[in-house]
Length: 351
Ligand SMILES: Nc1ncnc2c1ncn2[C@@H]1O[C@H](COP(=O)(O)OP(=O)(O)OP(=O)(O)O)[C@@H](O)[C@H]1O
Ligand SMILES: [Mg+2]
Image 1 (cartoon, rainbow, N blue to C red):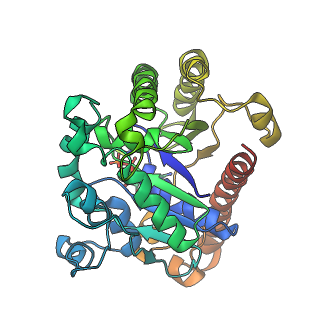
Image 2 (image 1 turned 60 degrees about the vertical axis):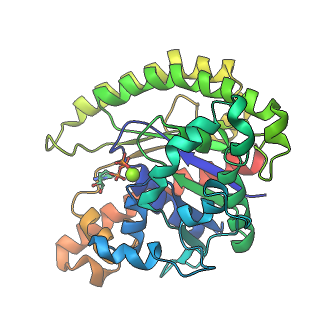
């Protein structure tokens, strides 16, 4: 059965999308069959993977012929637009250079489903006509995973606490919280600690609702488990940050995770057993990965639609000593993603 891993933080710009692509590639390199699903109406993942720069380039994915399902919105349309047809798997995009990796493309119009899903998830009397919506994302993912014989779906989410994210998180098997070492990520731990128990409570009610159980797309019985955080040590707007300043925020994040987040997860049965973390050699308070600044590699990675850790010498456009230094730093990114991917595989295969 496919394992769904949500990349979730309502704080924006913490590298959710970049992680989906690079980590997805690394997991695929380790022989997992991986679908990266673009569930953010901003469609940054789709743009990044397919190398789209201009808006009209998305038309090939958005304007589909009858019978074609090439993006998430089209996949969900039978449920959300009450079509007399059943949900069918999405035809994913294959990815040059990595045959085990597939993209389930996003759609800017996914945002239009947010309000209807919100009403459906209120679990009120008006539910009868909306009963197929809460289980529809899960059904679409399962069918698409079956089609591609996927082991893992990495779900790239928008930076919000809206109904779609509530659904995606609560129907996933595991979740990772990407973070940046700054004030806002420390604050985000507080809001996540207060929102998640409400979502767990909602999910418990949804799972017990007879109408949702006998819907065409039943609400799945899931208890998402926390895999860990991934901390990106880079600063976008304020230029270079000394590592001492990063360390201060990383320490504060670890403290927030330890004193607020982990107790909340324990109370809500969202934390894996101690033994599983011990097996991979980390504590749940410690990040799965601490990623350094990609510096100039990020532009080349985007230009060549290749992961940060496996650009060829030609793609690096450098020679001599400079090339040697760049390759050394690329190797460090390779090692960081590789260790993170090994930890994730070990946890999800044994949980
Ligand atoms: N380790 C890194 N070093 C340098 N730049 C990075 C790193 N990780 C991500 N970035 C850059 O930071 C920006 C934000 O990253 P990304 O889009 O992945 O974040 P996000 O969490 O998906 O954002 P959003 O919340 O808007 O969806 C991008 O321009 C990306 O190229
Ligand atoms: Mg994003």
